Image 1 (cartoon, rainbow, N blue to C red):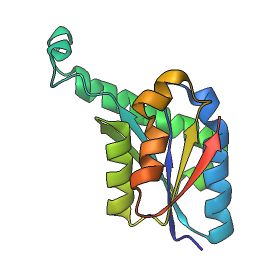
Image 2 (image 1 turned 90 degrees about the vertical axis):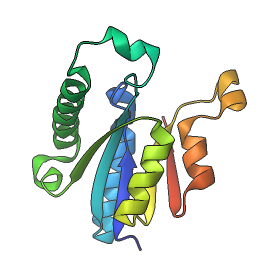
Image 3 (image 1 turned 90 degrees about the horizontal axis):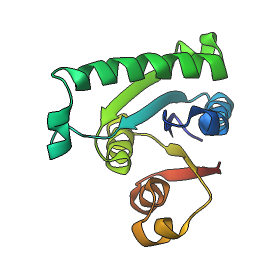
Length: 144
């Protein structure tokens, strides 16, 4: 029985993430668990690429992503359930921030989506595989 569920969403492909969020919401409802939803933005600020963005771009991107995440979750799971959801937006390597958020929230379960693997996934390892490999709690992978 879970007390805290963390659902990892890729806001770059929201239509593929619908079953991931629906699964996390269903599991949270079944267990009466708190639901946290996280999305992670890539970090362009610390590299050469970051110099091409205007000052304040990162803060604006985080604010817009948080707003989009709120709209997405409310649309998929309903406003009533969404009111109790903690919406998290982080920047950096997705798997690292997902694992960190799960640890900080003392999550019992992480729900994450995984697309059909391609050759580069076998060589590099997708975020879902890294989360599964390093998580200290159970991980439910939704094939998208």
